[in-house]
Image 1 (cartoon, rainbow, N blue to C red):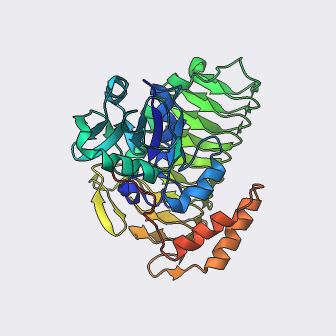
Image 2 (image 1 turned 120 degrees about the horizontal axis):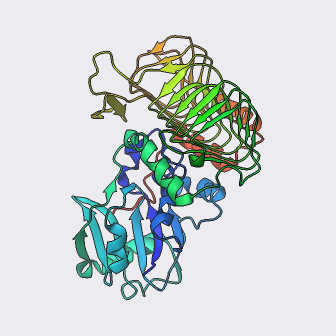
Image 3 (image 1 turned 60 degrees about the vertical axis):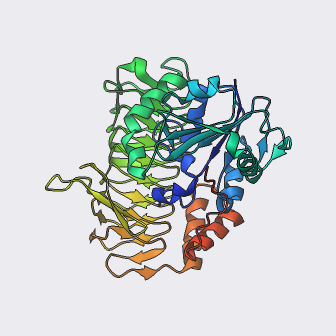
Length: 423
């Protein structure tokens, strides 16, 4: 059975701030592909719709034209709503493929998925909204059975970072990107590729003399149009998205989005698209949103001197990560001046401007903060938007009116739950 699959956000999206201020939780990425693309590993032929918070719906539909957003087409095999925080599918695909009646799949007290069979979904129109699905579930609640599943869900952002190596290897195996000799990549004399059968270079990738790509410990996948410059070393498992530039330095076990510039040292971290880390400095065990700029020598700590567990503060709540290696979590459009030092486990919001060449010792920096630590000034929203527009224009990207409106809403502290589904 191949049902219509709808990936949705539940009420725990706030636990993934600052990364989910401007994107749904299932757009987070730890491998080559974001979470929502993992569905294809188990249901490659399934039609899929994406259900997001209303606050994000217009901008998200604009950037994801290949998927229906908040509009669902009823299939012949029923409808499956899958929690967008899905981490490990476990036995869920087998359970769903065998399901013949409406079933809620749970792990502990959390709903992982809810399948509404053809009979119970027949009252839905051929094209319906997420709210209509919730109404149908409530209408047939007494007839929906419950089953335990071994599938697990992400609970926090640092868990996404912890999965980088595993997810890159799984994506590489499933996607099977073209290997050396099957694309129009150019590898210059003097460049060194180690374990080349696990290295994928897309069309127009250029690897210059003195660069090293080493897939001994895991695969390396580099998207089309990317340039690997001299004295750059890339160690797998690592993904680097299209149209990026890797400068002198070292990248290890990281997932880098498209149109990024990465120099210095990057270790076990996720960069979303359009991140600029052009200069020297270290970023490790971190999740970094889009359009973030790191000034020269910006460096974070990801390990305490006493090797104790690191606590991260999200929304004022201090949480023990259970790990001794945790870096920084940085929201979209945030900028760092030269020499900025970031405290272990720091969480920094959207559109911050941090400078002064000092250690930022705060555990959590609110969105739209301006300054060098301690007492933060409030970033003027019009100036923040003007800077954001200028930054985007440098990459030939225009900030839409919906993007601007979202930033203004976030500036006012408006984070809406409308469109979140609790199943």
